[in-house]
Length: 357
Image (cartoon, rainbow, N blue to C red; front, side, top):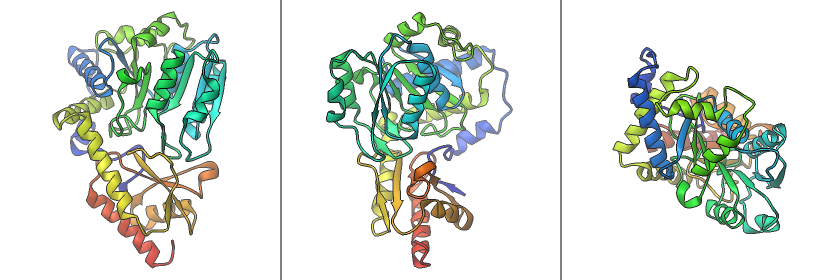
């Protein structure tokens, strides 16, 4: 099977080799060194302020989203949240669950965030802004310079879900004045799912210190105290954290984050050029390098997903809910090559030849 989904994605041989090893005991100086190196490289690739801190949570990217809300926002906040798909909706549900007052900026699927969407909220006393930098469900990559300018003008605390876009698209935490960056192990890091990564600015650290988190497992004060010595308060996903270490060092050795972004962007551009002439429409107004969202004009998107899986040995990424039959997605993350995309396009053209699409 070739995996063109947006997570979990294909891991390379060096990452898989670590996964094949016995999981070592972790309360050791050696594991602490791995964790501290992970922190250093994540901060470097996120272009985070020097006095930022990184926390590794054993849990999916959604665990990182909830941890951020629980530890940095309170009922005294007044939050703005962008909701352009299922992951924006997740932020909405978390704010509601944790009783954080909020206003929702709701966008239609595939639509970009524009200045006119933000203008009504200028100078209205908001304190926080939450956004999925890339709304993975619809493939929309939001304009972070636009959002950053709005947040700076209004002194807003900014939480950014970069789960599917970290290492795939440019992100400068310092320049954007983002306060929390969230990512996960299973996207462009191309490791197994199970670890959520949070980068916390000095402002975020201040909020964490003032917060009273009602969940011990997700309490960032406890996690930050342990991370000072390269450890975690609870048993972590030791094997995945070691795989993340291998992957981060590999990116560093290959030229850093800019080279990785260029590699992924090159694959995205190659695929988008190759599918011209096929009966697909790109549905996003603002594309990320991470994924190409496609609407097939002749047949159900989910039927294409099933046929690809069952007849061609290829995974593409289906959608759920009301978009199940309308949109499928092709990812550009993980250990993929142009030759892999040639096979995918050949499968699409074979479907077309047989009259399926």
